[in-house]
Amino acid sequence: MQLILATGNANKVKEIAHLLPKEIELLSLKDIGYEGDIPEDHDNIEDNSLQKAMTIWQLKEINSLAEDTGLFIESLNNEPGVYSARYAGEQKSDADNIEKVLRLLGQNTSRKAYFKTVFTLLYNGVAHQFTGILEGNITLTPRGNQGFGYDPIFEIASGNTLAEISLDEKKKISHRGIALKKVIAFLESQ
Image (cartoon, rainbow, N blue to C red; front, side, top):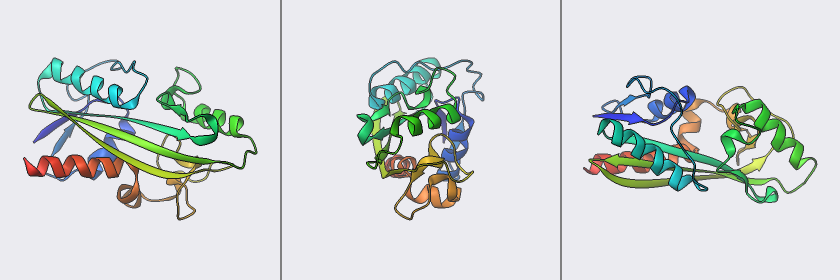
């Protein structure tokens, strides 16, 4: 089965492809000749995920998978949330986003946060949504060189950041992995 992943983020394609069973061929936007960004102009990740999947379905009428993820930091009023990718500006720089979060948190001792991912699967034209949440804390400084986005400052229960663990370890516990397991279970039931 082929699925089009509605993202231009090569890191997400790599991570998600690593999680999927071998019988599912994951196509990227590049594979289908889609140039530019897919709109995501809603104020919540559920609607953004749906919008991205619908954009691809309407274009190609091929089963599509889209996700939107946000980092929600309790003491920052759940920011950056839906604006996680462009928190420090439209350039979508991971380093700038991390710097902004750490600057705003300063020495605040309340550093509780969670990642939330919502996948939308448009399967035979019908939308299905699947959610995964990973709780943790924001570190004082970045640690590790694996992963992407906020991974170097997101500390999990083991005491490691997501950037300090392997892709195989991350796939077992991550917000994206949790949601994607639900997608896979759904597809296997069809």
